[in-house]
Length: 323
Image (cartoon, rainbow, N blue to C red; front, side, top):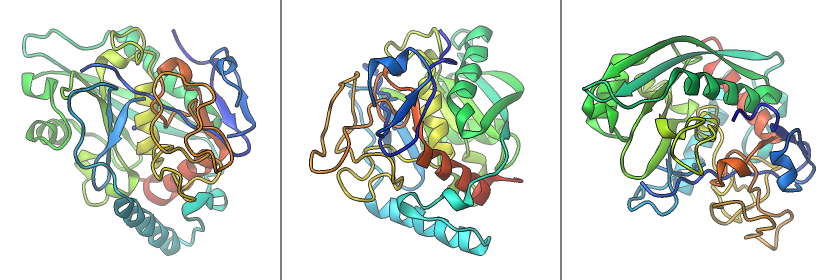
């Protein structure tokens, strides 16, 4: 099922999304579809440095290097310097609006499918087409669209189960990566470790251009077997990181939390679709469980906030535009 009718943008201040994968990363939200009706207002765990991973709920392994507050501050400081150097304004806490892109952006997308050495495994053509449709629906109101330039298939057992930080990942990306900072490389494989996917942040491109992109568990594509994470929003979540968003629960109940001012604070990731969950009761707004950057079930998430949109547009201008 495509989600082209359930995208929403929160216009004021509360919005979050969770995409956990079981077994094996605002008040006034406007809902444009049936999923939005489920609430009023994907699974991933971040690693150190500038890579974010998504881990299924109940997975036996977890990334030991969760993105620390120091790592986030370093990324934010780097971004502030980069924006200053380019004459842009913006910064943590949601001050990105003045640096937002002014025209819609079409992102050239390269799709890399990894299958077993014997040629089995991997998504169908329809699933891949549906996945791009899901991305385009989710990002339409943020003025980003994705146009597939090419799709290639590689049979390699090591790459088929590659996980973040491994030799297999490095070899896979070095061999297959195409384009520059403004091009999205998506890799579909059958990663191990209970992962749903991982992504790099825009600030890492200069030092590690060949690792740039997102890797997604192929069974999380629309119609896949990774229930309840099989509607395509693992990719939505990971592309959010690639465009510069943190998890909604990144900073817990701190004031800056995810460095977007209109997402409410959230102490920990949400799983399932716990309507009314409020883990930071002293702060305004219930947990943003319907936000694409939480860990909720795919069927629960359908929103980006206006602040998240401004941040993505700003970081596109800062790090990726023209690359």
